[in-house]
Length: 474
Image: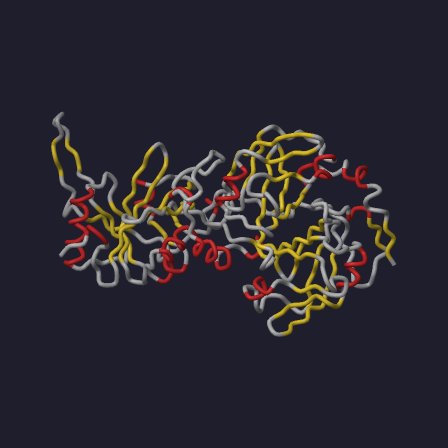
């Protein structure tokens, strides 16, 4: 049996005890949403902290927008800068946005496509400039995105434990609930017959999963959950997968604010394992401007790579260390023009092409040349420690990947491994996908540095082993 205190009656009293950084709200994109968006009045009235005239809105890909907040009659409306956000992420009528306050007038946001009830895949941005909320032409080159990369990264590389879906309570919602088809298609075989659902108050419910024609339906146990939390028509539930057939859920009412599940007093039912009320509400994931992948700021602790993963180099391009005399009469040793990773063997013809490129570019930093293999095709590319130690940052750093003949750029997190080598990960994977690189292709990395920023222009010899574009020899 369940005894419940009236949620709306005590909302103000109980909400005052919840830390602001544990508060969420949602908005559905309707009406004149491209021009402005109002924060739910209930959220504003019960917010203890101060929201300044300019708020920070952090998108799922980590980009932060400065947006003007206009106040009036217990309302806060997002004005100047909001239109840039809407345009950049191509928000449409019916999209749902879930906001989490994290302090200092800063919100994080998740973007859901209501048509699929899954997140809009916006995790890899092709950035040519900082998109912070300054008015720019929405169709400018700076706002180009690679939607194919977004989708590929989200479903194939993003940790499943960072994925969400939502459900609006309509129809026969008190009896059963189905998991969105798009979500199921990408989790096939990984959700067991018994699924755990952790409510906002920390209680965990076990549901027997029914699978029918690629559909996953929560039926046995769902009615008890719906009753205990007084789910009503048009309530919105946001689910986060946390592993091992276990989901966490946030529950919102139509006002856009969370339902106060703390008011519920459960007389422990047989199907509800009592785990203690943890009040762990850190539900929406942390996001940073990303390598299109991991958010671990301590990624220098990445596992030590094997010699196969972190190849030893061969310094090439100068037949022997050339000794010259500088203007002061001191001996100097010329830098090599390029460095070959172990396993990368150039034919005479390929070497001639590389030499032609060296002559054309005259790189300040030697090229790093490697051959594409199964590892570098599947999502990560190691750069040997000798080259990394001399020419690359010694700490994790976001870098820019470019193609010599395309305007798009790819942002990746260059990770420093414990043995001193470096690794490119999901940003590299998106580059490989978008530029149709193939196993055995030869890649030449042209590294440049400016004001602490690192850029890698990636030249490639295709399967026919001719350099792409203007550098090809004939």
